[in-house]
Length: 214
Image 1: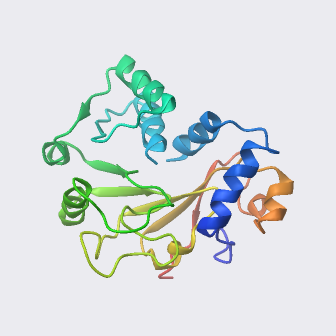
Image 2: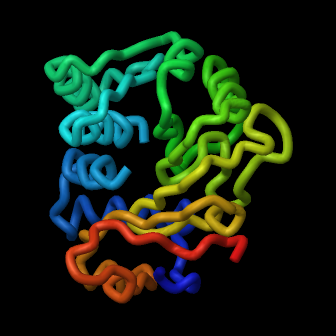
């Protein structure tokens, strides 16, 4: 396992890092979304669903508020072409699945959880399903972690996959914690104080980090 002293990215730094990647780093938004999805929000979840289908799984996508951005339209078309079903009935979907990828909100989420997502998070919390959260458990604040009230109170997914680098909320997470996103150039690792080349080994693209409860 990797060192527990791995530097975390604040909300501000995570946003600035994305800007750097799309300017001096030479990455497009499509590429960053693809890189995020293969290691698993919003769009990251759609990419993850496509990869899961190609890996032999049978994903169903809960996507009640579809973005009008061209990227979301193309990602949705890719899934439709594979026959991946979309649903608005999350209650039935939860009864028919054995694993949930929680990619409802990204690390930039703030404020109260609004309908219909409040009911979804409540249902996830009360289920016995294995849940993998992408970058941040839905309803969690990137800095302060789980909410003290509301539908997300007590919501603790089975696993967390941090993208690029852990966010400060990771110190409140007690499940299995993984890191994915092995693509940063050395100059950006240095700028943001990340020692990612020391975390991964060989051809690993994802690595498990020590749990905060250990």
